[in-house]
Image 1 (cartoon, rainbow, N blue to C red):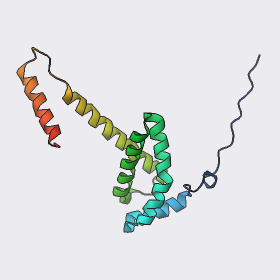
Image 2 (image 1 turned 90 degrees about the vertical axis):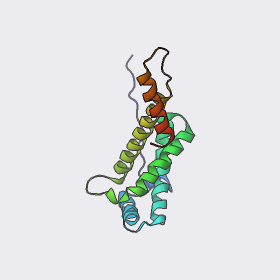
Image 3 (image 1 turned 60 degrees about the horizontal axis):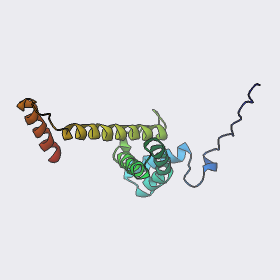
Image 4 (image 1 turned 60 degrees about the vertical axis):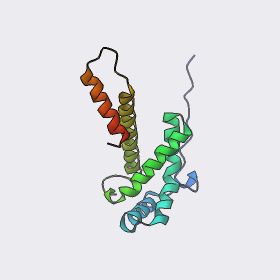
Length: 145
């Protein structure tokens, strides 16, 4: 018996998504105000637009809402810090934000790998050079490198 094709509902426009939505032009104007003048109200509008999207993405991929919120916060801090690097001729603001998010994830994952590698105890019988290197790495991590 042949299967019936699945019909997907049409995607809503940005306007239909609610108060957190804006057009690309509106977001670009906010970003220009943030980059140019450090406009906090414009940044607030960007946070209102992107925070729920980032949290939703990270909560889906990472599973923990608290971790998702922390990653979203780090991403938004990076957006404030790197606002001057955004060029609307090269990409959309959404693409820029999600590249920042990807970079935040990579930095967090790399830090976690480094921390777990430093926590591994040398096996009995290992040479003393490895033990000394592990101790130096631990000390560097504890002192903030």
